[in-house]
Image 1 (cartoon, one colour):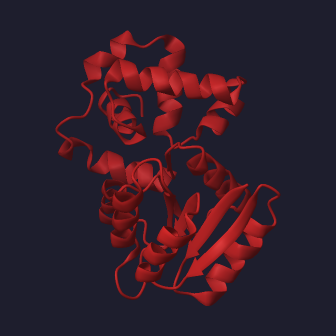
Image 2: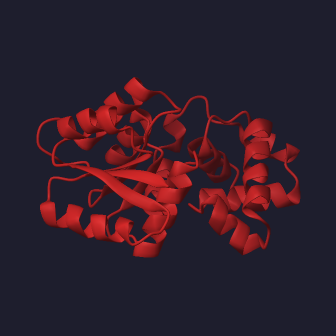
Length: 214
């Protein structure tokens, strides 16, 4: 069972998300926070698997709350999935640097949001197409991004997987598109990360952009 904490200053929004999460057989809402400070405290006390985090909230914002949560729990602790109506370049980059595992707009389809929660709970990263574009826009600001020539080490299938990652696809969506198992898709992504010496999916997006795959 995936345990979810909702962090949003709007009661009606939290209620809508609670109904959606509660409709899934493999998830349950374990708490709700109306401020960034409450999100940090409740995450510490309840240890949810995933925190659905808004950015603009009273007190510390969602990105600062994310930073505190990640710093306290480490990579093996609660995962943060940011949901916002403010999908700007600055917000995306701040959120990713704070340690968020995913970034989606609030108008994401319900089924896609549930899928995103499962993806993040499984330890994978997830970027919406809008967030991906924001990363690409700032790609050259990353001095340690994988060099484009390293893509020569990838197989044709790995290059196709890389293109899909760069398009914001999750491992499940990659598996569906390529007609392979999710485990096979995850293995491809892991091999690409290793071959390119990339830290995460954000760097894969940059590598694909610089190599002209997008």
